[in-house]
Amino acid sequence: MNTAGMTTARATTALPHAGDRRMRAARTTLILLGTSGLLFGLYVLFDTVRITRLPGVALWIGAAIVLHDAVLAPLVFFCGLLLRRAGRRVTGTIVLVVQAAIVVGSIMTLIVVPAIVARSLTSNNPSILPLDYGRNLALFWVAVALVATVWSVVLYARSRRANQRPSSRQS
Amino acid sequence: MYEAQRALASPVRNPRLAVVTGRLLGAAFIVCFGTGLYSHFLQEPLPWMRFPTRPASLYQITQGTHIVAGIACFPLLLAKLYIVFPDLFQWPPVKSFLHLLERASIALFVGASLVQITIGLINTYQWYPWPFPFREVHYALGWVLVGLLVLHIGIKLPIITRFWNGRAAAEHEATDAASDVESPADVEAVRLWGSGRPSGVTGRLIAWIDATPSFVSETKTVSETTTVSRRGFLTTVGIACAAVVGLTAGQTFAPLDAVNVFGPRKKGVGPQGLPVNRTAEEAKVTASAVAAGWVLTLAAGGVERSFSRAELEALPQTEVELPIACVEGWSQLALWRGVRLSELADLVGADTGASFRLISLEERGSFKKTEMGPEYVRDPLTLVALELNGETLDLQHGYPARMIAPGRPGVLQTKWLSRIEAITA
Image (cartoon, rainbow over all chains, first blue to last red):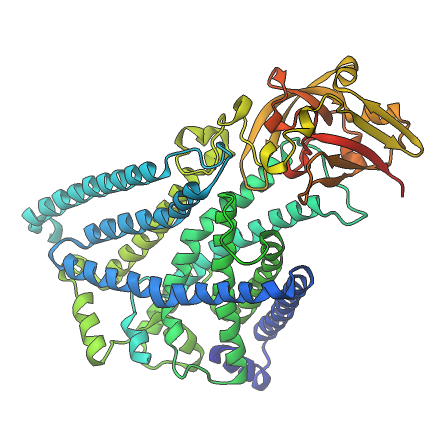
């Protein structure tokens, strides 16, 4: 329970208000409903998965948290730092375009790299992973870079034009 | 820690964007859960369950949607986590027992969500690098996640309602920014927001970086700049979603076939122009399926009749156009020709309300024996197929005979049929 919620709850007892009462009822219902869903899921997990396999599930969930919070997020943060520093020289919107290009390319990479790995491991079934994912990913990065460059040039040209005629915007 | 949290302050890390992306991610989770549940019960129906057989492409639609929404979760979940990341550093880390529970539920929510979409994705590549069974864990985590989602909505409801509506949210932000005093009810918002200037070394560093002069030009106010970077953030998330979905969905959604460059399957790739999920080699049927003495046995009550392939071919043939739709999210329409299952059932005098058990030649595998409810058995589109796209069924597609029924997952379209029997209630 967060502080804000508890404050609201305490205020409700002092000063009954229809909206607050409804909010409280809705939250209680949702929290109870959610908890039962969670418990049912855990029951299904324990019921259908052999007990010796469960540490593996816990390990993967724990590893996912560590991987995100201690590796991915700091990496994104420091990329953001570098970009903002570099961005001191150019228009803000250009920084956003470059940022977007890196983000889109990275997310696609995150999804496609396992396919590249899986393709190298399997298999005697030629209809699974039939494409050249490495080449396609490289082409995707090229396309993203091209679009970002063109977009940036357009933005740059526009901002230069605007700067050459400052009086027209101020009047 | 509070310093670290403030250092992470950015115009996009605010409750309004948390609500906006949260809504989209929540919707994607619900869609995945609903379609996943449908797929689960098709494969493991409760005794009383009956399913619609029309539209014939129903499973193609639900499971295609399941995979598409699951892939869209990657950018959405990462965006959501980016927005709320400073929450990780709240100080003190634990304020009360309830607060501990809340944080634990968030940790499980984040970890389980990441695992769920990752194993779901990699399962579509038929790669299983994890030390647990996929199907059972994916199903159980589905319930865990939908429970945690509802719980999370319950906990955050005050913020969600406050920032649900865009205009009202902007007013809240303006009032909050105007007053230096952090009213207790807004603590949560401020925590997410990181409003107020950062202090300390980190704070000064960030302040310097934040003060990108070109962002704040003479003609733009600070709030306009904020709007620009928020729009930029949402646009980026939108483009990322469009890219990951658009470049993979062609494996099920025919109009996008031309730009299917990252899908794990490609329409038209496979024997007889159709992808294969489980090969004859994997199922170990390469000998038994081509054996000269192969017969398909039908049994109902005490009656049992066996048909050779030639005898099946001599029966009235029906041609149907049905998709093969895999749990892994790919699907493809194909032309099938064979004997109606309902007509075979009548030949052995099966009860019209009977469910059937389908048994394959495969030596082992979870789908060696499957069951089919009467709504599919009696459907005129349900065939024991002998031909595919005008040719004799390829061994990889289930020669000598396979099931094809409308609206069923591929794993239940039993290949290399050996025996079909009515289940006596």
